[in-house]
Structures are given as C-alpha cells and as structure tokens.
View 1 (tube, rainbow, N blue to C red):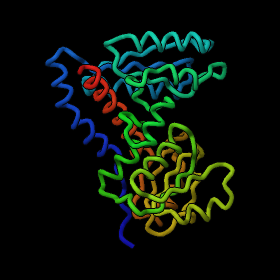
View 2: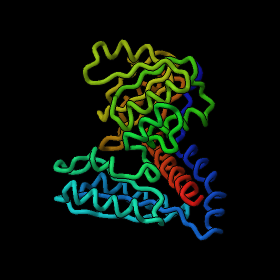
View 3: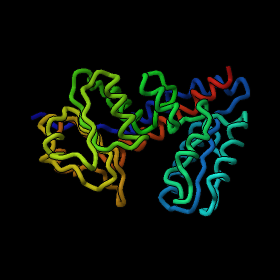
Length: 280
C-alpha cells in the first residue's frame, strides 16, 4: 500500500487566506474593513481560547474583530438583544456566537436571532436549509473546511460511500448534506446506530465528528479509506485513533493542524464574502 497522504490543514488554510487578500484590498479602497463580531457567554477556558484564536487570525489578515464578552448568568433575552444590536450595525459583517453557551440559554433561539446575511458560521435553520438545497452563501464552517480539504487535494467525492459519524446540526448533518450534494452516497451514524464498526468499514470517506477522543479505531477503517477527523479533545487528541487509522487510510487529517485551521479560514472567507455582499 502506498504511503498515507497527510492532509495538511495549515497548508489548505494558508491557501484560502492568501486568496482573500485581493478582496480585502478592494474593500479597503472603498473604505470598508470586513468585521467579525464574536460573542462569548461565560468564562469557559476552551471557548475563550477558540475566540482568541479567531481574533488573532482576523488581525493577521486585516479583518476587524469585535469581541463581546457576556457574563455566564446572561439570559436568553439579553443575549438576543445583543445579537440584534450587532445585526443592526452596518459595520459588522459577520456574527459568531461561540458554542456552547451556558445551560440557562436557549441556544437555538439565540442562533436564530442572527441575521442570515451575517450568519457566517451557518448556524441558523435558514442557513441549514439553503445548504441542503446547495446554494448557501455560508455553510457551517467545519463542514465547509472538510469539503475544502478534499477539494484542495483533488480527492474525488462523486460516487464514493461516505460514512459520517455524528449528527449535530452544525457539523454531522450539514457535512452529510454537502457530501450528498457532491454525489456521494452518505451514511450518517450516531449514538443509536447499531453495528457501527461494520458500517464504518464500508466507508470510502470517513468523517469523525463525535467529540470522543480516539473513538474510531484503526480496525474500523477499510484499506485505502480517506479519514477526516473533525474532533478536538483535551490534549490535542482527535476523534480517531490516529496511529491505528494511519496504517489503513490512504489519506488522513492530523489533529492538530488538520480540519481546525481550515475551519477558521472558512470563517474568515465567509466574513469577507459577507462584507462584499453587504457592500453592494
């Protein structure tokens, strides 16, 4: 078997970000700076790290980043009011509500408050529906990152059997839809799936999105499969047993430096596109 191809997310992310420089410069000539507003509710350290990473990525690219920190006892109504103020601000082009939010908040209601024109993370039901029909401006960023990696490495999706492990509304479900829209045959697995290992062994493309460290074992992967690990757990550990899957896969994303950097790049790409669209 040929040596396994390591799908370098940093390389893909750099390519995406470099492709945005022309659009950012063009907007600057018109006095427009793309602006991403990030909302963090509470003091979860992992969420704070993610928000900081996104802010730093914006700064390096010349995108303005506004960070709105709200206390952990914020109510759903208070959060929605803050989102509506950002919706009404013409200088804000994208809004990101960092997930998860504290338990007292109706997260779905908060997501739905984000204007579709500024839903750069693809979290609204309207954005999900547009993605299902194949014309979303801003699909969910991690699914968009997975497709971008496959595209960058010229990995064909059409006709392949894709097995997605996970069915969250901002990862498992939308990536299943996006693979289906590119003519893959898709099986979506979840916590109630029986004989999971046997189903995963059928996958030409396997997407792991379960949030459990090293959940997908090497002997679940058929020889030559393409493995995309969308998980990120404590200790820089993904959702697949990397060493075990590396022996079987023809291509695999590492953790870190796999899907994660491309997810951030997709967010920046969507923010620039939103600025262009709102500027017209």
